[in-house]
Image (cartoon, rainbow, N blue to C red; front, side):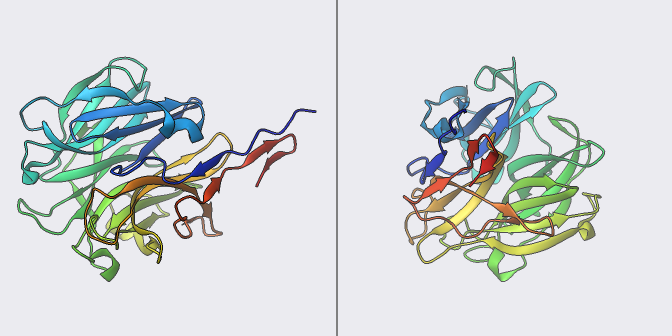
Length: 319
């Protein structure tokens, strides 16, 4: 009889502060995580999800010394599309009002290898936190956070169909605005979208309220009927993951299903009640689904508490 595979266990935080905006991908049996220090993009890879953030990062792209994408690289995302890896990141020239979304394409098949720039996405203004999703017909869409005009204002979520991974097919369509009280603490913000799709239901999980405050939290947009560009097709629910007396400032998540069959959420949280960004670190925990097909995230786990993934036995997967 084969011995059971040892239980996989996380202990949060996975990276020390300052670390934020996690993006984790599981592709062909390998886990990949992308991050940035503000000027360099790094990729970690591992066949073991627990070891992923312990791996030495590989620098895959360095921002130019000057120019429109030379400063303030934020929230990179890694996506595998038709045999190539694409990185979406926000950057500016040193002035926040010039933040735009940029695209890199892998030269080969290695996510930790060389990339070439595909340029800036024409999002119609200030833009950060780009992510991708496909509808039931296979059409590719970009979802991101932006201002309604050229001047700083509420951060809304926008969506647009893409003609290819580096080109928007059409002008942006507003997806949602921060109108609920839990979306307006510290500042009116909807940002950091991440997509979950299961059994025909598409969920956009996003960060709400000011990211520098302890009140940063997660909201949920649910689409059961398709028509991604139809605002009426999206139902808003929230908050679905928020601060507790012991854990604060939870936001900007990423999702995978592990080779154990476990659904995991990666996110960042603050370590101080004082406003700021430099005290955030990256964490992970498992989540489940309810009878209506919606994700259930529970409450953020305390630092130092083991987060256990399923154990593989001869009889299958067990807690």
